[in-house]
Image (tube, rainbow, N blue to C red; front, top):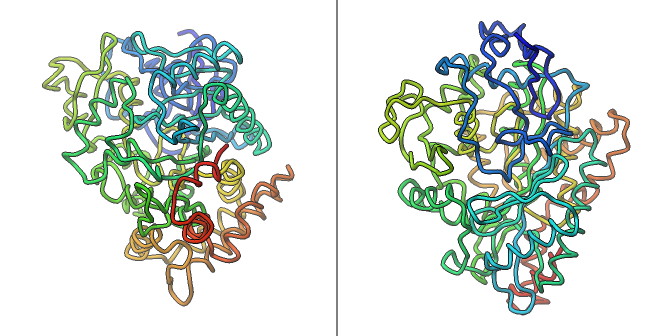
Length: 509
């Protein structure tokens, strides 16, 4: 068999013949890729790698899924799904940092949401001026790609940058700055602006435009059946997240547990969503509260991650039990909402009888799971509100310092080692309202956050890349326990005369 290039979570080659780095884990399928040739051309962010995106080997999130799949003539097995996750393992020298952030676009003169026609002009303008490649769904432009980066549209027109996998926070922050400059350059000519905040402070769901993407229509119809806040999540939230690598199943487990346990601290530090439809909503991170009742089958804290037998295998069990949203076939989304991926594996999907999934389908299914930390072939830290540009750099710095330094990772494990499931759930529920001032054991969560912040800073220092400065924008928050949301509320009640309109200028990129 010819050598197959397998692209890992950060876009680097795992092995010349497609054998992953997890052979030592004891999985019988650790070298399944070379045997079945089922992991060709995959990368970090979803979809298949196109010719123009292979310079960094990144999957392009803006692109609609491919429906040709990757077919070897053999049906996928459960072991293949486990091996898919295991193939993300890579040695430390190949670890990368992938950042993503979303932002709200608005008409500067009226503070109304951008219509799709304006978003279309914005995307076309960026394509022409800065040489981004257009991504189409039917006749509609729905995103852009360039050199491992992608711009995509969330359901309500939120503008998302999915960055390329990069080596340092310096590179990540430079990428963010370049993107924001380009967006601002084109947007200003169209009378548009972008604000960094976690929940839309002014518009109702009804006032929010709907983007012409097939998967969102399926989700929009399904969400109200399974939770209270699904449409709010889709149309009125923005987040910033970072995607990070692991070198083995054991390393993944440690990072997953630390990420889940400490995610409420990140939520509190980056809390930036205190308004709903022009009024304070009683929360510091309303975006985080939204996620407590979107669809409990696919979101939340995942207590099983802390069980002794957790690993790639158990995450596959979890993912297989998450109801499906869709399958992409013949250029169209097939509504599979509520159906079982287990049935799909057996060719028993009622809407596609006899059809069996490809790894593209599995990859797409994994993107429809929304826990606070998500496992693909890398780990996604998903708990932070969108915010001002400096915090778009601080979030990846925070998690990189903790998870990419062995001493800091162990320090974090020591901190959370005796936390109970009840305590973790309590933090998840109370942080959206109380932030860093949640009482925890013999003090406040703020005091734990200060210890965790030191681990992040020390971890970055030991990396020796002068990245510690990217934490400066959150240092005062950690020291005082006063969040960005609380600063916004103070401005609202005092300087702004109880109007949310000034927040658009205050948080303008």
